Amino acid sequence: MAKEPAMTREECEKAIITGAELAMELKEKGYNLLATGEMGIGNTTSSSAVASVLLGSPVEEMTGRGAGLSSDGLRRKIHVIEQAIKLHNPDPKDPVDVLSKVGGLDIAGMAGVFLGGAACGIPVLVDGFISGAAALAAMHICKTSVEYMLASHMSREPASSKVLDALELQPLICADMCVGEGTGAVAAMPLLDMGLEVYRSMSTFDDIKIEAYTPQK
Image 1 (spheres, rainbow, N blue to C red):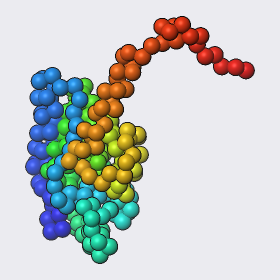
Image 2: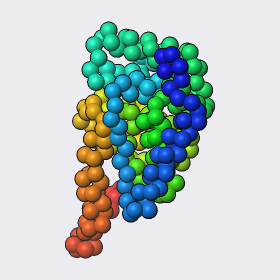
Image 3: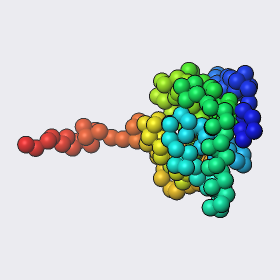
């Protein structure tokens, strides 16, 4: 993206559709919860660019050290993102334009998973920052898709909290994790299982013959 758009608009749309179709295929196979995740090097750069444009926030506030950049490396990363945004001028009102110019196929594909999950009524777990950038793009494509998103953890990347605030999601885990690859999403699954078990099985006051609490004036 430092020299040319990350992909064509057609390629971006195809990636989004591929992600949505994958979610729908999993629905047909009987899955009732999906988790996003990615594996790549350098994609906190594209995620910071996407988040910066969609949130209208300064690049330096949205960019972290990723896999462990030095201070010089971080400054170069910020500069590259700023120059790419200036070069391509992505339209913040057109999330597909943003993804195609400064995003990546991974982010576009995950955005499709969030959209597909919402379309077929399956909740989708947001993993770390990169997954969060995809969720943000999905929300800008279809606002109601957020109703089927669950935040697994708060990434150490500085933009993570800003992205979750924009999505109005509360993370289940705050453990200062700076990894993606679906690790936070998988770690959150036992918490969801426990919560569901409590909801289904916990005794009521009537069940255990305890007088219910009444507010005192």
